[in-house]
Length: 127
Image (spheres, rainbow, N blue to C red):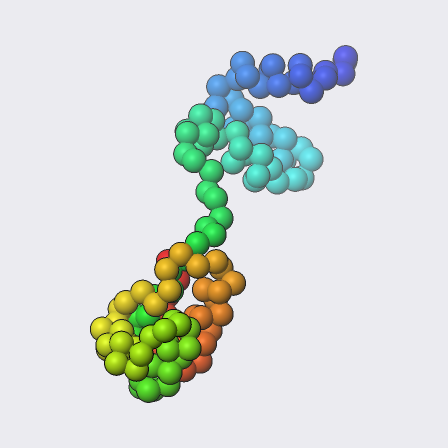
């Protein structure tokens, strides 16, 4: 039997229906005792290519969901995180939860703010 090049194999696969290709993949997995999970997902066809590729989010909003039992500690942390915020404004922000604390910040700063707020007793989400 003559050895087929990668291009020739691809030409053969292009001629196959999705059902035939799926059957081939199953037979290939059984014959060689392997799993072709990632290639099978790639071979899903045009429907998979139509959806935009999921990009990693690079901007986050830190949203205060609730202050918890230690409201005073949370107010202190909010004042620390949001520069130029007075005591009255920080208190109103905490009492008006759910409210965004920081908007469009990088992942590192968002996680840092979330950790500080959770340590103070608040419930926080990143969006």
